[in-house]
Length: 368
Image (cartoon, rainbow, N blue to C red; front, side, top):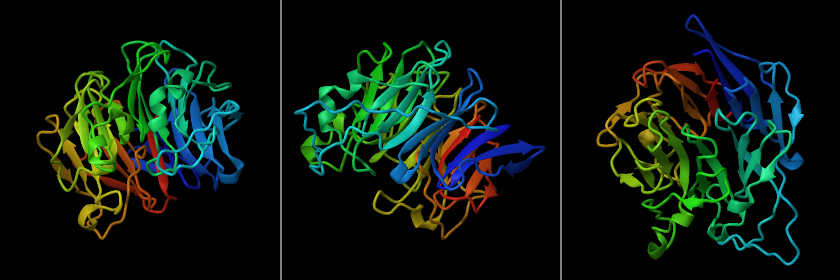
């Protein structure tokens, strides 16, 4: 591991490793909630999404390895047209056309220099063609009739939290929405197709359980070497797709539980994926108070339960959807928890090493 970005409730930390020893930097943006941070491999830029609470959403870019962080534009919704009223289908409250959270910023395809994507709450996807200096709402998705059925999962309103770039060509991506299913575009966002058939929801009436437009995928990831293979940690279990989201198959048995938020897939082996199980949405803590990671090497047929180096309990760590990442080799993983603990493994999860136990609550980890 060379470098990783750790987004927390009280700033952005940089993790480096030298001769097997880890070092955490002082925080950038001290005291500010960093929702997500990412390294752009195309030009080396770093991006950070900040939530200033009452003072709104701010985005920053660093072109000098994190030494300085000039502010760039934040995604802004257009004014709601006169006479337009949109109600959250669950709360029946008016949906405001305003950026509540920049949940994820994702660099575009390698052949699209300068292109970034940003997923936000209340359910909008934005695109930038100039490295975040300006943003445009992807109106084709925002205006899609199915959006009227979307609603929030952990947040009141729907949110775009997963942006999976297809390496086979520019403009091809899958996005995950809570609670609005998964959507695929092959033309840069001009048109969209639902990519959530086969998912199952138990938080709606039984006759609506299979509706792809109201599914709650917690995180959607793709195998780089086999782009048609997608994995998701869903509110109601683990699912995988072998056809780029056309159809999903549920994995019903996976160690302590199939509930969780985090998922990682091996970049070269589509059959190998990792998850961090919890009790349930209502009880967001490890099963039996024991933090473990589950791993499948055969496409979900069987799972290993990995715990060496992790706390035996009682543990109350929850791993958010962006707080689990895998490097380009498929050997190293990072995992950060809501209690401020950070773990690293260099052997695919067989042995975990505690990097820190006293960081602020961790929202995201990302290898550079």
